[in-house]
Image 1 (cartoon, one colour):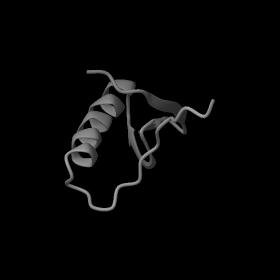
Image 2 (cartoon, helix red, strand yellow):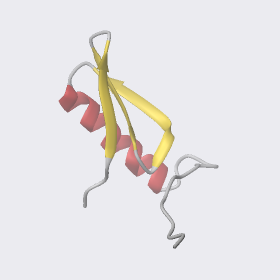
Image 3 (cartoon, rainbow, N blue to C red):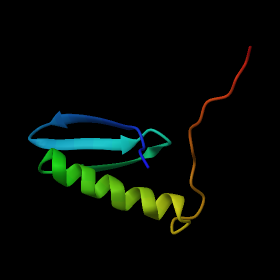
Image 4 (cartoon, helix red, strand yellow):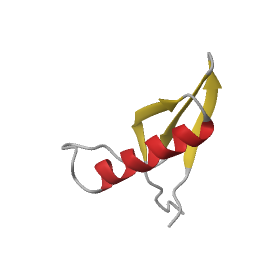
Length: 62
């Protein structure tokens, strides 16, 4: 399974979030560490460990 992420480097850290859950950011000292944090975050968010999660998705309008 693949999920889309948004990420960037800022002040020596890699920062990012899961495209489906744009309100929940995390960071790592390397891109690999950021990916691990995002994977953990995904399972917490998708698995219901965090209540009241806001999501982003696409809908067809035409």
